[in-house]
Length: 424
View 1 (cartoon, rainbow, N blue to C red):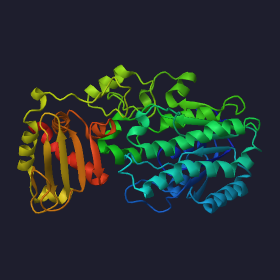
View 2: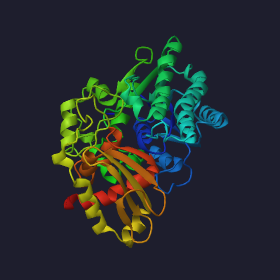
View 3: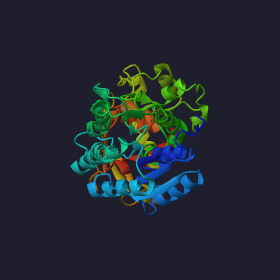
View 4: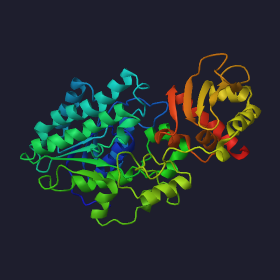
């Protein structure tokens, strides 16, 4: 997507712009010579996440734009108001709002603490509403004002709620802002649109959810930046109320080859949530090749029907192999106790202690300390996961595996699975 200069001199207020999709959109606009307010919380370097509002500001200015880094908590009215007033004072107004800041927790109802529920709703829904509300008086004065929320189409199918209802509600809150505000401010000429990726986008959040190797199955944030740029260059009075998907936007701009946006064009892409239109043959291919599809339409990743040929005695085989890897070094790496409730042809309860002594495993409940994380799955899926033919993230996201307890420690188990892959 070639820069046209249409955003030159325009002022964009972007939440969560210190990294990921928000920063990519900021840099795209900066190449036109835009002014960018970086409204984000990260003022000091984070131990696990790259970038701050100040490093992002330097990149924006190096790209040709002007930057105003603002420490903003979108949950706090005073914090947002101060940033908006600072933007208007420095740049004379606001032309574009990009509500990108978001919180995610892919947990079921019983596994979602109310503190996490509140965080998602306060950042995703309330934060989007608050930032939009405070910027609208200035947007009305702009010759081509836009609000763009990084949020999905409102898909009411139950599968998008079933496994993470709290997150879906919070994310859909952002989309409902678009649904309502597009009509409320149509006569004022403020375009209100949503943009969502067709596939997973590699960001720090995605790496935390899927691990370091998940990048190969993702597209880069630049595809969202280019799609956002195309939307923000449109006439605000003629393009509003849309729930756009990144590659659809770019196809309409004449782009047909999307390889440049892929982290690794040779690897099938991981579909994103909330979209039903993804080519299911491609999803099946991605699954067969080991990708981690995050959704299905019922044709792929149906609950497995365990067969005795596939699962008889294999759970025991897995734990026999695990036992051969136990030792203080592995315990030091993992520092967690796990329990497994296995159903299907080889039902039973098993434990894996990678916290105490040199480690231990066997049937029954953990004998030393309670489990940090618990798993429920069929014996067939249990073996597939430990043998490498079923990715843990895929098993969790498609409902083949239920997890309760400490999600961070649950994800650590994947290290052991990698060691077992060649042994089973």
